[in-house]
Image 1 (cartoon, rainbow, N blue to C red):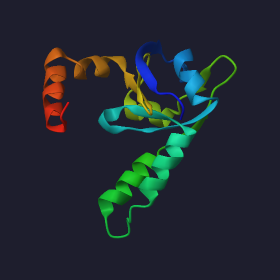
Image 2: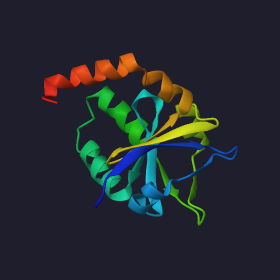
Image 3: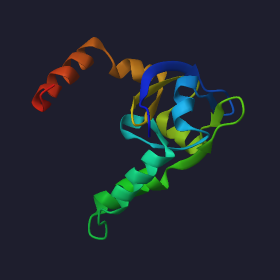
Image 4: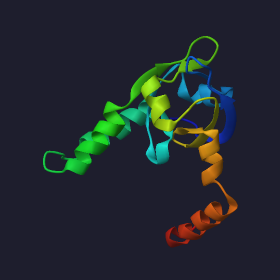
Length: 145
């Protein structure tokens, strides 16, 4: 991936489950990308090269004797979908993924470097309170930031 995915974009998801991808993200994602379940009930959108590298690392972890690893693979790989943008820059979010992230109308797309997170706007605002943000920054001290 040449450039990074950055920024916060407020959008809508239409009744058919289509989302217009912001132009700033389209250039980096290209026409085809991967969408998967993420932690905290968001969805993650990956450029194909980033997804393939992530999938290889995940598949390299032995799972025969570890039920937690098997479950994570089922959630992330089994729950992912190939996506393609149409000529208007829209893509369809599958119903199963919309249900997982509780996406109905107002959404937020957040570029976090190597992927885009897609959030229900109410949930995004609920986890981004001033207190939560202060706690998150305080916790980063252990990493020297």
